[in-house]
Image (tube, rainbow, N blue to C red; front, top):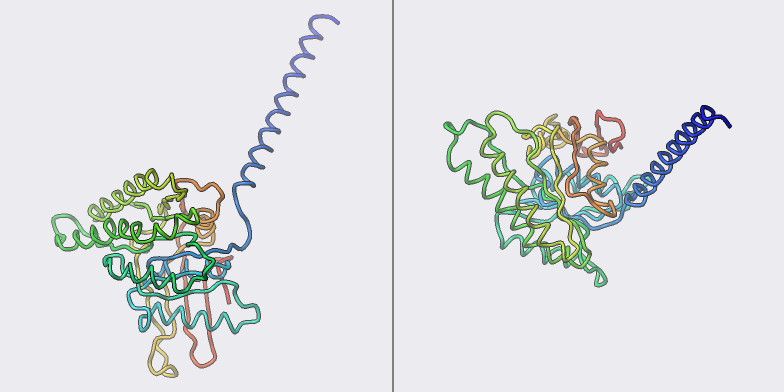
Length: 317
């Protein structure tokens, strides 16, 4: 074999081995990704610290549809709008042809009050079976936002954001770590996300929450508890803590509003949150990075109940 032919053959063999190696590496990465993620409906017990927000409401109904038992925290678990929405949503789903496998348990919860947090822990324990050791995850959706330039804002607004966003996050960890340790569960916080004009104090509070999450991760690592941050870039800051907006007052329902709308997450963002909850090896941070959508809930009036969304793939009835 002449030298030129040998050189061509060597180059061809190198190219062939390179292609084979790249293909093998791709397959290994694919297998590893498959092994670290769980697909399909998930079972678990999850606490959402505030469904007084539209975001919390959407997460509660979505996860219940996925087969989870959801403890839905709210400041008024009886007469508030979220309490009525969830009560009627569960009633409607239970009477449908294919009832959901999960459930929603409304409960009083306020992250600014340790006494109520202690009562919430006791209430959750009362709903658990004797064989249950703890809960799967806590998603802290509680928080407060006031937009405004520093020179124009009231100092009391700063104090409220610091008290709710920072101290509230720490109180949540303190109250529910005991329920996460037995299951090696997850504590999930909303990150700083979008930073815009008039959000100096709010952003400072959320950056502090992220720092708290990083330090909590180190502290809880020996117990197997994962602390996860959700990057909320792509979601307007106000949407994180905005309450549902009532509209369409109906005389057939004694003048009560029959529809509520709010800006919440898309189906893609909900899948990201599912990965944060159920990946076998969770990342420290997950990026939502998707535009928000319109989410409409309709309370039943007589025999009607409608559930609408303008994003394909999100729950529909």
